[in-house]
Amino acid sequence: MESKGRLLVVDDDRAIRKLLERIARRAGFEVDGAKDGIEALDMLDRADYDVALIDLMMPRLSGYELVQHIGTRPRRPVVIVATALTSSDVASVDDTLVRRVIRKPFDVHAVVAALTEAMRDLNAKGTLTIAEPPAKEPGEAETEAGESDGETDPLNVRPPC
Image: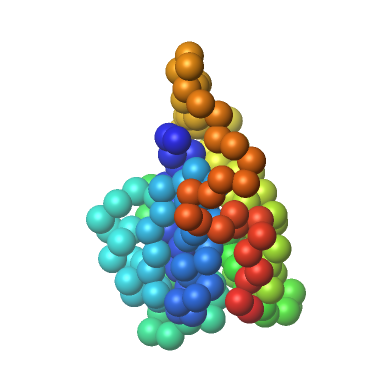
């Protein structure tokens, strides 16, 4: 499967970060993870990302501060915030930079929908072409129902938060 886009997941909770990374990979995204805002800035210096999925409450450099830093960059990813904070706490984030807020505990479907919507918006602006999965070759066997690739379907995974 070709990548739908490049995603940076930033969350200090390792279990949540790994779950979000897995959900995004299963949805077709190329994914990197960062444990805090400092690590995320370093990664943003080294690579271009289409979307950044950011937790607001993190040590060293918070998600609030990370969003501000992203706003000063010439090449900015679309920002999606994942948080358990109240609406009034989220209101202080620059809404010209944040595309969407996903509430924790999050619904897996909402995460996939937010990522897909962000990529659709980027594609509409002509900055990215979303690739379709390759067509099956003649004679290629279909996967039988019940077969597994060894990974759990992300739609059946309960978030740890």
